[in-house]
Image 1 (cartoon, chains in turn purple, green):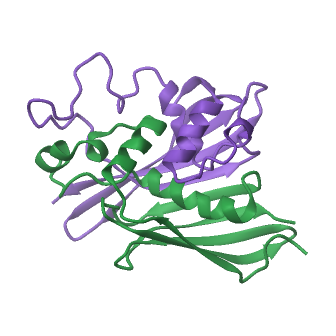
Image 2: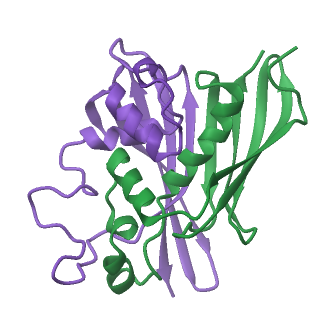
Image 3: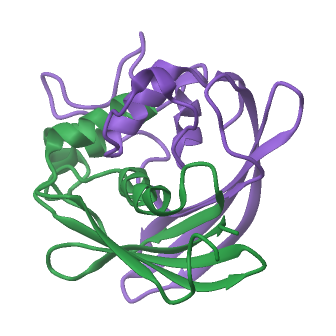
Length: 141
Length: 131
């Protein structure tokens, strides 16, 4: 995802740490973000499609909801390279580019893989984290 | 003497009897509210799954703690996984992290997370500066 400004705030890091099973410890001394925290840059992406907003949401309400266009893709792989740890107080920005695509033939259909590379830079322009994500879409025979 | 010796391994129960609320907690913290993970009716009736399942990134995040509890939060150089099976409410996840090598102060780890049936849900590798 491309996010112009992703401030790494102590409260957000605390909520994320709790969600991935870390005990609270001394919450006034949080220094580092957990290894997968940069995924939460989505919070700062305007109009992020997996976040309900003012427009109609596609999950259930009175009815069961509807499958959105481009739905059905699943997360196949996630890789991070840490050029330095992400610290509370950092202000990151991210830029995304497509990577490789490939296909695998399975018994019940075709698996279509697509790679995306996301780089997270800090406020001084230094590269902090490089993320490589692979998603897969199963196309039934 | 480094923090980690080649051949050492650690095991950790990441979650016991995963709740739907934990999945929603991760949705709120990460910002990924995909109804596949947060909306039982949508997951069953529209997407055709038995019900909601955990974000792969929740499992990867939980497993990350097995690494940082061992080497510290600031020493990781890389961490990557493949998602090999879905994680469902009620699952209990157990992770094993093994130090495969330590060369020039950098440890290479393998990591595998299994559910209560012994099925691998994620497998991956990590490197950390430990010297």
